[in-house]
Structures are given as C-alpha cells and as structure tokens.
Image (cartoon, rainbow, N blue to C red; front, side, top):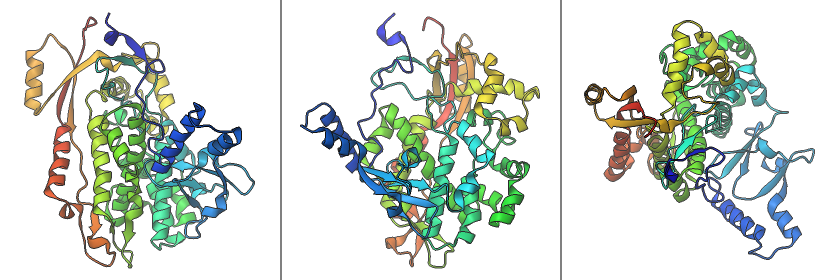
Length: 474
C-alpha cells in the first residue's frame, strides 16, 4: 500500500498548521514569533525576560470598565496583557477572543444583568452542541489522497461559545448606540438565545425534517417549555412575539441579529478551519488579519431607527471571508461526506417514533449519539472515515439522476443539493461614512469586479453532488 493510501488518525497526522499567532492581532503575531525565537535561544534572553514575555503586562480589569455596558469589558487585543480581576486573579479563559479583531471580551459574572440572563439550562445545553456538527476539514492540499479518520467531531467550538459572543457583541453595540439597559435587555436576550432550539446533532439532524426541526420555528416552544418566556417578561420586559420575529430576521433588530450571528460564526469557523488546513480561508486570514473589526463599524442613526456600516471596503472583506468559508468548508462536498450518515442513522429512529422532536430539542449531542451509535455505519470503534466516499458534482438534478441511472454498479449513497449562499451584498452602508447621511445597500458602493467575483464564489458552491461508497480496494 502506498504512503498516500495509508490510514492516518487524528492526533497522529502531521497537518500543516497555521503560522504562530494565526487569528491574533498583527502585533501579537510578532510576539508569538519573538517567543518562539527566545525559546529556541535564537534571541539571547534572561529568565526574567522570558517571564515577562510569557506572562505579559499585569493590568487590572478595571482599566477597561465602560459605564455604558458595565457587564461587558472590551479588552484590546493588540497587546500581551496579564489581566487580573479585583481579587488579583487572572481572568484566564474567560477572556473571550473575537478572532481576527482588535478586541477581546470579558463578561462579568458577579455584577450586572447579562450573565444571570444567560445562566440557564437552555443556554448551557448549547455547550454540548458542535457549532459545525459533523463537517470535516477537507484533506490537506499537499496530501489530497490521504486517508484520515476522525474519532469525534473535528471542530471543537460549540453553539454555546457562538451564542456567548453574540450576546456580548449585541450588548456593546446597542449600549454604545445609546440604547438604555431597559431597552436593550429583551433585544440582547433574543440575540443570545437565537440558536437555543438547535437540535442535538445540529444541521446533520435538522435535515431529517427541516421544517419541523427548524430552530427559528421552535424558538418559542423551547423558551415556553423552560418557563423562561414568562420569567423574563417580568424581569427584563421580554416579549416572546417580538423576539420570535427578530429570530426570523424580521425588522431592524432582526437584521441586527442576523449580522451579529454571522459575525460570530465567521470568526470562530474561519479560525478553526484556517488553523487546521491550508487554503483560501487561511490565506484570507493572513492577508486581512483584522477583518473582524467590521463589528465596530455598525452605527445607528441619531434617532436610533436605522443602522448601517461605516466602511464598505471592510464590510466586503468580511463578507469575502464568509464566502471563502462556504467554499472551502460549509459547502465543500468532501467536508459534508459524513454529515448524511448521521442524518440517515438518526432518521431511522425519528421516523419510527423512537426519537421524538422533543428529544432532539432537549437532549445534547452526547445523549443522542449514545442512543444511535450502533446504527452509524462507519463508526468502527468510534471512528468515522469520510475517505470511504467518492462524489461528483453536477449542475442540474437531471444530470445527477442520469449519472445514477447510468452507473448502477456504483453503491450510490445519496444526492446532496447544494444551493449556494446569500452573499449579503444588500446589507446597509452609510454613504461617505456619514451617520446623518444616506444609507444604501453595499452593492451600490462596490465595483462590478468585486460584485462579479463574489457571484462567481456563490456559483462555485452550487450543484447536485452524487455520493457513492468506494470499493475496499480503492
């Protein structure tokens, strides 16, 4: 068996990981390179020099207090800081990174209104749901035929972290726009909980019954069942009808939710995918290391009835990162190979009534897999192996079906209809960065070259992919 055909397992492979500091502020990337040189003694240094470099500058958390949003601290990401709280303890992992930006965030758990609103079983359940479900990274470009097996979902970031970042972004953006705490509470809660009705198994399971298992349709059911809608109505002025409308992206706050949602997942997904694999995601992150600073460009008009972005070019750079994410990962046929196995295995139980909609909306991923693992066809000893599939993309459903009819000897598994993605070129932008001026769709401020390039990326992700199981000798 040739080297390119040997099976390699996660943890034993030697992927070409991103350079030191990928996803961090450019100044921090310099720090990582310097630290590596000092560890190798390329740069002469004393132990005290090394200590200061590793730990960073001791800085009180209070230095970043902002009375407009006292629950959320925005910490500059352009310096290596050792941030300590009022008791002298480091804030450590609670210093939440917004990758590819100049800002980190810290949510005060002892003071303020926001953390108590997030401290519910419904919100914590999302910590057991993988943000990317069972998508797998495409094979390394330098070893396209490498056989790689995965022992667990290869992307470890969760819906909880995604929602946590959404909550903090929403609180800061609205507070800085002049919304009072009373005004922003119900909006921030809706944004924070917009994914709370994600089914166990995420999109892999949702596709079993897309309408019935849709998180937007089930948002109100989950909050009512947990008793949160009524409790929040009293505590925070929460209106379930309004919140359900925003979760469906209706109205001004629905658009804001949609934008913050995309910002959070693009930051997380592009970091995790770009760290593991070469390709357009990593290249874009290296070329534009601060494309997520676009969140700071959201401004409301003085009457707070409309909002838009200040910088069309920076918004386009962000949307380009999202487009590359769809091309290399979300709508990459290889990345979706195992996804449908989970759909089939759980679908058997679901349509037989052995797993109910309520189960999927209340269980976490571990509970679900414990129930259905014996049915997963490629979970050999807890491993799934996407290289066992092959696929071919067609422009139309007719071509895909015709291929299946003419190749009956193949063990056809399924056809996946890839519908492309919305490039979001209609998002609002202030003309001349003037919040008192005209607001137009981003499309009107872009050159035809940029618009056409984005459209080519959209078109390149569309198609009908036929998957079949390879013969053992392949």
